[in-house]
Length: 227
Image: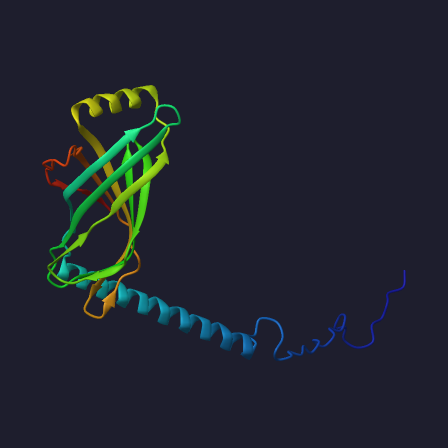
């Protein structure tokens, strides 16, 4: 078998040259200048707002600890009841009730804005009258007076048990009543004013019925404050 002859050296297959890659700026993962600027701006604004909120919170906490406002005290100092008749035929209550109430602010550095006050007269859990009081400002270590008057007639739906209680109180001449105060107030310490707070004040008291022009003794009663 004849042998094959090779002319020259054999180097195998030729390797093609590497292809040139081109990178275009502004494409792929690179950041758009406008979007980067907007993101940085939002981040800075968020950090500024967060820092301001922290500072305000610390200032409020320091002022609260420094001032330490005491609870305001509410009293029913006097009550006059000249009429309290319940008609069994139409469930109408005829009433004439006058109160004197005091509000004591014991704080040395905290004033109180009473932006709205509603007084509600209750009997056996049923409201029979209400009155809106004038708003006012109460200074430091000050005692203010409220004098709500409830007079008129209103339908009151009482159950058998409540009617029995009414008859017993009518025979004794002393009635158990409740007055609730619904308020919107703001506290003021120096130049700082708080947001509106809505406390509820409940005053449970016994009031004797005046008859034949004779005045009845009333025992001063402290009210319950619920923030």
